[in-house]
Image (cartoon, rainbow, N blue to C red; front, side):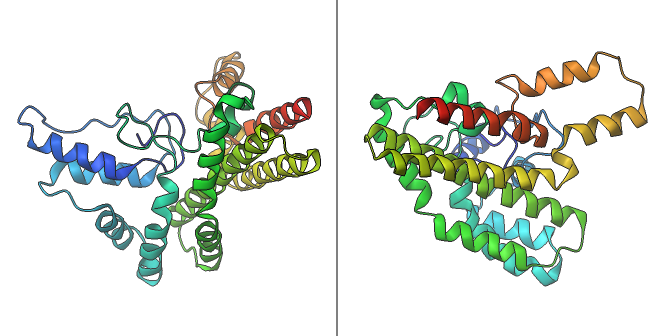
Length: 276
């Protein structure tokens, strides 16, 4: 639920908590296995699974985020981060995965990373576009507040800086997807062309903002990763090509700066242009 198919902070933790309780009562369950296929993923998911692998009691999600913040951040910002994470979790839970229909699954849908295959402007999905975008935009004021609070907090170490970036990119990605859903909703409503064009421009601008965030931290740069690897060990001459092909295929697309700048933005612009 936390890592598939992307690397931001995600997961419907009420659902996960219910399943964890069932697992703890099962005598055949000996522990948990975490298999992240990346080097920089969801930090809360890691702590959540480590703690629940050993503890008999399953704390509420707010209790677990409180503990996470008090243990992870410097004392001068830990209480503020505790409140911030409580506000942040509803945004986190907009993106999740489950085969159990009684629980909500993905609201956002990672649309911007696979725009050519996931954005369809289909009349049969009109209600889904409307309802899903509405769910996201209900949290707009909360999202703005989170970003403003992050900007005002001191960041004294690399771990805290990474968390600030993870929170910011998660928030902006949710509303990038929300803006795309809103444009799809307007299209199915046969809205005025000027209004639809403005909605599409807003979606592109949100994706550009997300790209700006990714561009400012080396963890999201494929080039930085490749350069660091090549300083450590010689690589096969074809490795760079293989790495790029792997990063741009549909299954592995993620929060990679170069992808966002040179694939996601152009693809979204081209799709909107063809639709108009």
